[in-house]
Length: 380
Image 1: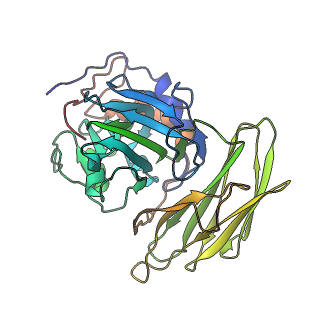
Image 2: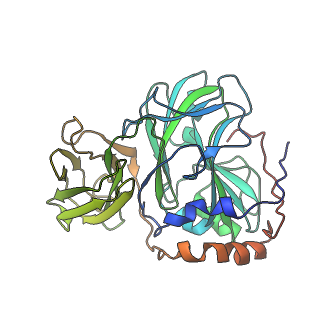
């Protein structure tokens, strides 16, 4: 077993992703990201493969390229990293999802792991989302994976408390075992098998990240989440890659309110949300100056009375495609929103949490020098 020792852990680069933190369960907006670190993501120091944003394979939602993780040479891993400082229970309550694709390789079912590196709680560990526990991946087909309450689709890199190593566990079990001081300090996209794989549309801690090789002038997407008793929320997110403000209206008879008016600042993003009922509804985005795009949302019937998986898709006006096309159900399985959401207060007190809660944690002390051991030889 190999371990990595990190010393002199700097606080500054770890605070990038708390800037747009939102309520638990919500996706605050889409952030077009490079691998420079300026938007959060970068090539991991542990990477041994080839990692780059590529236009070779378009993601299934925005169709503007994706992140390539090429480990065909059989190295330890191809890996991208998002430094983060956020309470584990807050991250667990947010939407956690990502799209993955395998272009080639002998064992595609393991695909791409989304990993959460955890410190400051009762134990240090790295959690890995396991696609093979959630239907797996084939070759040449995109799949979107999303964490579901009660789904044992995570592996821990080490055993602690009631949590075994490299065995299926739920995220809720890990949150309970780690205690209130646990923080996620890094998020990874990881390929350990000998695969040429791609990933995109990563949702974590209130932000959806878009690895765009060819950003469009304006992209509009929707994300729907259903609740246990029926009904749910639809978040409409727009990203503007021009120097001028862009405006659009999003309308749907089954939405409350029925019309969302969104103004997207130059080179910026904007998100608005509406409630959706139990019945399917057609939602249409219209851009000021021309262009529209529609999609059919399946609605959110009461659990047990109909299938109500999460639904995500493209609403970019002017993009060809039939109404109802472009959406992707998250694995085709029910996704239940958290019963209680947390106020959006993390942006102002994350640094205080880091200095207080994490120092108090039994696992790791973030005071000048932090010692973090990370298991590197396990397939996650």
